[in-house]
Length: 479
Image (cartoon, rainbow, N blue to C red; front, top):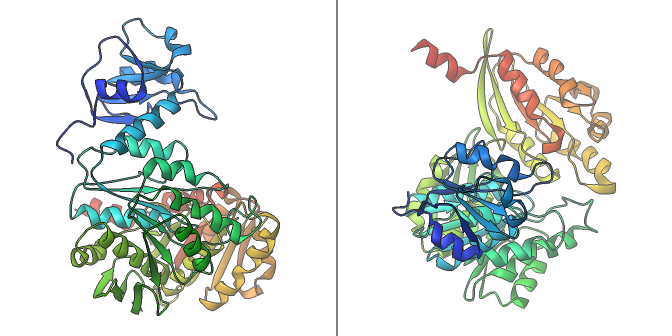
């Protein structure tokens, strides 16, 4: 935790070229854009969103203990004359100004992460390993867009030693302004896969959009690229054209700078032997899946480039746990035994689906247990969406998945491709699939639930947890 306040009101006012109203406290402990989660002492930014205007919640924020509110000049007259306000022309623009001021004062090593798959888990892994070596700040959740990045940057303590920012996109041109704000010393592209095809002509266009991250890399900085990916050469050329000083590769390729030498995959973890920039390390990775092991190479390479101790970083990976909706495991108690639920409901695309099915294939099951996949639509795939959904059948066969439940119009394509013996059930929505899944599971099963966020697959996880008690809850009740 930082030893100094995040901001002073004077520094915020200067950074945002704001006018002050009322009596402003000097110490500001944090930045908030949601009055419901705001903590006492934080500054509330009344951002205008697609659905709600933050100005409607300024009074609630101040009542909840906000140190001050940042509001538009055009709406400042709505509030009490002595309300503690910083008044600006545009609230989101002021947040961007504050983010730039935050970056200007930082002495930290800054890392930016993007990629079609694995952005958040890689960012969380970096946060985990670097936090053991110094004050580390990272984007919360998946705050990786036009408001999430400046919010994350504005929240960065001035005395942080490491700072990690996730940068996302689903259209060309979105990454460049964000990375120029973050100005990383190290930038990671985890992989480039056919996602958001609704908005891109093909995978090369996606690679070009991801390559915008090179535009903001600091002079003398480095990029970390997946050498196993089909777009590696294209990305490398773009990085050189942008003047990036050092290109570091990771993967299984024998030319990779951070190379996987050997791996032992287990149901809940992996044992990894790797060469990281010339140093051999052997470590336990606290999350299952070859894809996680490959991304851990990028984590260790970036950590080393940022000046962290490689041995300590690799040791910390044993305690890594999945982020919410990205492989978190729950044990539910049924009559006669237990069921493992693997919650992958945050998002989905063909690459992450294949990876999740691989993990399910490694999951332990009881004597009568089955490996069950509950799958919702993968969105934003454009005209080839039906084909990509049908193609999941290959991974289902390869990883010996016993039973598949599908929901959504696009998943109907997979349902039609499944052999009769693997068909568990189909519905047009997650809500209508709930009952089928809840009544079908039995002790010993391992159930993986995944779909794009818009498919609302979390409702099925919630239904299972409501119907069956969790093992942790029962153990606590028994104490």
